[in-house]
Length: 235
Image 1 (cartoon, rainbow, N blue to C red):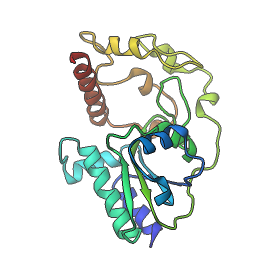
Image 2: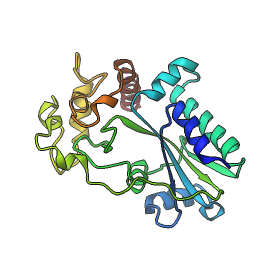
Image 3: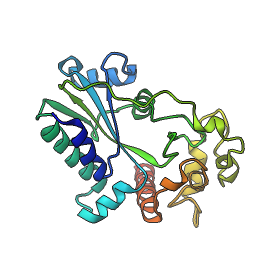
């Protein structure tokens, strides 16, 4: 077992965020979802959380090719399985996300020290700002040390101006309250919406600006989310 080499491999593929969580103290929503899905958490020893920060993963995807109907998930799962098999001695494992199990990603991110709540409704990270994402959640039976980020204050608490709130054309954001998702969706669905394939509020966030996704990456993720909204509304 060579964790350091494995983490280096993952980082080269853009999966540059990693946490190994103890099973005691996992969120109630996670335990409930696992039980409902017939998963015996006690058969494992660690919960691994994989993520990407910045646009390094996007560069790796474009280098190796956008494969499958969901290239991001395909890329992530391929290299996570490679990590487990090669660097965790092919220990028993179970991939929970991506998949159909309702995993509370943001709650796990908080345990890992990645996630701070923001007016945007998505997590803001102390290093990457809003430019990070959750890519995989895996249960493993391996003797890994617990690995999380040290506790830190929310970067949003240090942001006095909060330009994300004032720039939102849908007026969907406010300090200390969840975003108005309905107002956001309604605006995105309008003809010639300025937020159809991007989020102006996210783009103006002053935290982690050097890790901002490239325009192509922004269009890809927001394009897919817009397709999902349209498909849901058509049902």
